[in-house]
Image 1 (tube, rainbow, N blue to C red):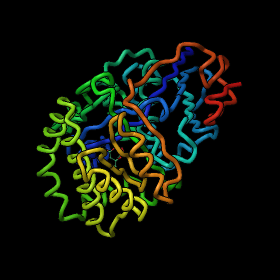
Image 2: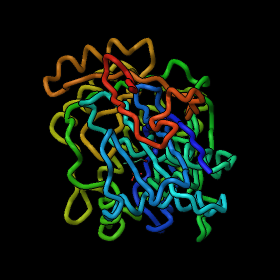
Image 3: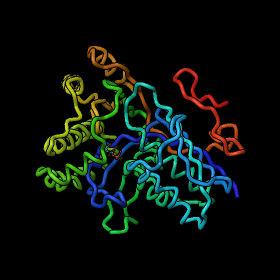
Length: 358
Ligand code: PMV
């Protein structure tokens, strides 16, 4: 048996954040979260091949073979085993993944990566999973990845069951619902984050006294945010997003030892957005587990936001993203990152050339 599938999935940026697990192994969250899936500027392409030729699983990331014995990687690659169990096969797999993010972007690509892996692996194994099943599978690689199996505006329902079968992503509105919405990404730091989100949120749950208060308020925030999005009420949406981002960063700082992902440039951006909004809502920021800003605004105001960011010397790069349509399968075998003999093809991504496969 030899089967192959290639999928591209894109990152998502949460406006109501996931920060805290109620089950570490199954990756079950303490709260529901909401995000927009981004467009193809922030995509990962992943090819998965199952073949009797392979004696063990292999995972390649950005042209280099990963060490599957190393802790976090091994845990996340549980996806391949889950797919085998669902398909009733024992065949080993080669998974090859390429992040097509602007090189200096410096944000986590795990959501796009694990969503693409769930889609490609399940299809290659002959499974035809629906969005709910795909998101449950992607969740095991990285919580936020469960939201990237869908396009548009997505809610990850926290669920209550111990087996996690009611903790999955659901689309609230498609990418065509609010076409004027943009995420202006202000890159201030390209390096890796000091503490991983996985380790950071575990520490918050264990030590933050404020965390309980955050959890109490979140169901209301989720409902208010859904309403604002469905009504395309930008001022309400922007305020909710900014307050929710600050709320998450407050519990991070309340963690012991404290976790501070924002830097001085991030704070300068927060002040600039508040200045921009002094005459009415133009923009709303949100920050993940890092200092780079995601500034939601409307198409008509992108140049205003860009101009303002131009006044901040710490901003190294600006990327303007639309809301994306979600994962897509690539049927043309020339697009696969593995050749028909099961060898990894030479492949690379650059901003100018895009994906080059030889
Ligand atoms: O799924 P992870 O482990 O990458 O955690 C993501 C956490 C945040 O990006 C900070 C919030 C979110 O909801 O995406």
